[in-house]
Image (cartoon, rainbow, N blue to C red):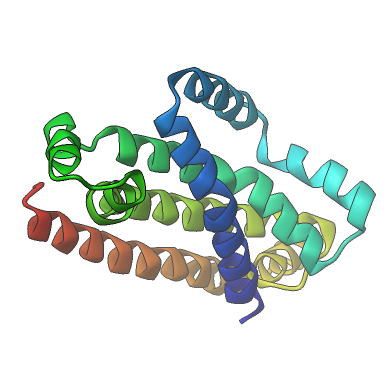
Length: 193
């Protein structure tokens, strides 16, 4: 439950922060280049690097883990949001403009529904990266499934490590299946597949 709570909280924060940044990147070509460059820069760091400044500032706590996960998993949310809005067909946007839709109406009624399947894939990646990061944060002494793996590893308890690892894997698989199925149905409904 602690793992689900940390991943869920980090995923919600990633969505709240990453969606507007990805949307801004999609709407402004020059800003997009800067944002994508920064995303590329942050993706080159090993995952453990994100823990060092967070621990120095916030000590070892659930908040530290959530902030580290946020720093690590924010990139796919930005990338997929940007990609989703950029893949909205030009003709669809033009048709909405010709029908007299305001920019807000175009965004909410035309562009967002078409971009949603890509955005959901970004959320899927956020969850996977958060699961990976939670396993890494066990090295600093957190209390979650990652810590179970770490304790079992140090005590040579292979079965316990395997069970905890499978739990993390099943959390990822369940999230992936739910999001992928929803995204596929949404694409079929919109006639995009």
